[in-house]
Image (cartoon, rainbow, N blue to C red; front, side, top):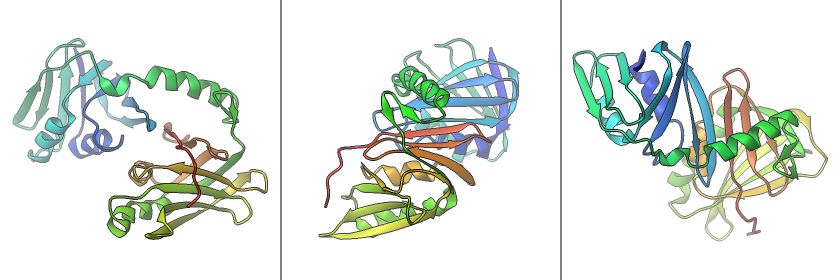
Amino acid sequence: MVSFTIDKDNFNHFIGSFGKDLVDIAIDANVGSISAAVGKTTHYIYRKIDCGVEKGGKVYITDIPKLKSFLSNVKSKDLEINQEGKTGTLHVRCGKSSLQLPTSSHIESQKRVSVMQKAIEQSRQSMWRMWFNSPLTHHATLNSLELKPATGFKKVLGDKYSCKTEFDSDGSEFIVRGGKSATGKMFVRATLAQLEAPATSARSAFDKWLPDLLSNIPNGDVEIHTANESVLIVVQPSTDFIMIVIDQEYEED
């Protein structure tokens, strides 16, 4: 039986940091940590967190909303999770409260993980200079806290907006923009360091889910790798965090 213990709030934050509307997830429990990866048409996220693992293996969670609701209604900080096999009942205990959830070996958020992980390994071996067969030309580091104000796009701009990013080599800035000229725009800028890029800027387009994804980046310095009209790769080597955000067709507004 896979079994691990972890601080309730840390675990709640962990399962909530893979993007909105996540229903299910597969967690790998290894010595001293748990990790998970989610692959969707819009993005891929991998992250891990330290915890006490009594017995390693995979845990399959098929109803994250119900699990998060349980966690928000219990007082104890000590959380214990157990599961026997892919389809075994998920046992969650927090203090004197417990939850049992049925599970399934079919995890929707895992459908694209293996393909993305192969591409990530190839990109990592190229020192993040390639994504599939396309070159990544713009590289730098930035402080992720400077991107957090982008979460205010919805409050300022409403529900209907798209996002664009610009890697401004000349100005040493990474710019996230939401909105359009006809309805208003909001800009968030982060200072770039350790630049490796041509003098030309790299611009890419994303949908309104970009700010939520940026909010899930761990605090502190991160690497970014991109190109013109290309994916955005965010890596934090100190925590093994990786995020790939899939770009959309770029249109000037």
